Amino acid sequence: AISRGVDITATYEPWLPVDLMQTMILDIHEALGCSWAAAIVASCLGIRLILLPLSVLALRGSREKALLQPRFNELMQKQKDMNAEGNQEKVNEVTKELQAFTQKHGRFFMLKGVWNVLLLQVPLYVTAFAAMRGLASHPDVFRGFAMESPLWLDSLALADPYALLPMLTGAMMLT
Image 1 (tube, rainbow, N blue to C red):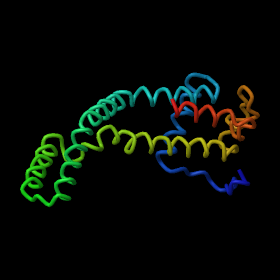
Image 2 (cartoon, rainbow, N blue to C red):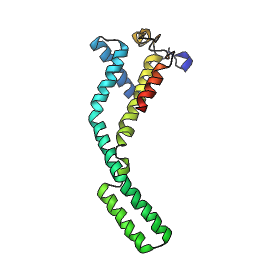
Image 3 (cartoon, rainbow, N blue to C red):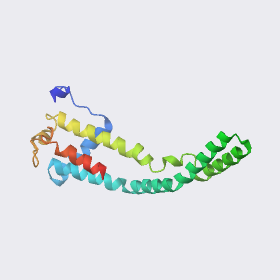
Image 4 (cartoon, one colour):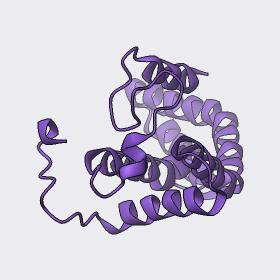
């Protein structure tokens, strides 16, 4: 903790979302009587289950965007070609088609399927990272967390000596 610039003598007051995430993990750990590692996995699965309907909506939105993208690209290319030709009448015609397209499908149809990631998943991942870092950086507050050594790890508060967890995380994100 000291090597990361954390003063362990100072009182630990995390940011509210980080505190809520840590409290959830702590409550799962205490309520189920399971290990810290199992509490972390259970909290991740619980969050994923709660966000499942939103993830399904985002997936549908990205499919819809994939269906609309070719038509939009076609109209944009057509407009670009007409501008290059200098035929103002055809440019106005294509512009009207583009306006009808955006009126029908929305001006920001390109963001369909992305809002879930930007507004929910990224902040949750950052919060989870900060919560894990807070748990690991304050062994005086979370004694059981620092003392637990699941599988090949020496402690949950120490880095993975074989870098298996980062490789596993990377492989999961690629699938």
